[in-house]
Image (cartoon, rainbow, N blue to C red; front, side, top):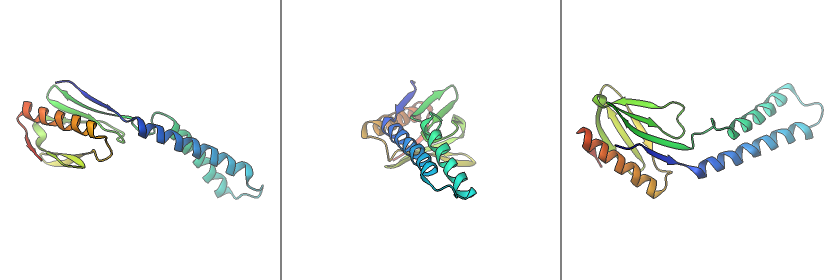
Length: 144
């Protein structure tokens, strides 16, 4: 079974625009304020600039989501997640395909939620097809 890689370009562009705006506004606020700016204002403006720089880096937000069927496990790297999830097939009870999210129920652990409400229709279709095929191959119960 092939890996599914979805790219989210619109979100990456919006994040970069917001990061650039924060850098510019933070610098302008430092430069244009009067010289008697309090220490808290300095610290706040520096954090605004640093957060803007962080949003310009690739680490700010994942611009792609990955679903991969590895040997004996399902590897998930979803946009907005800091870490990937590796779920052994033996832990998966069922997969619930919802309109706005996919829930992967696990034995004895909290269910994994994959939000899909912001995805485009073709991307949602690909995720649904991947999950249906994965569940069919691994004999996992799937609910709609």
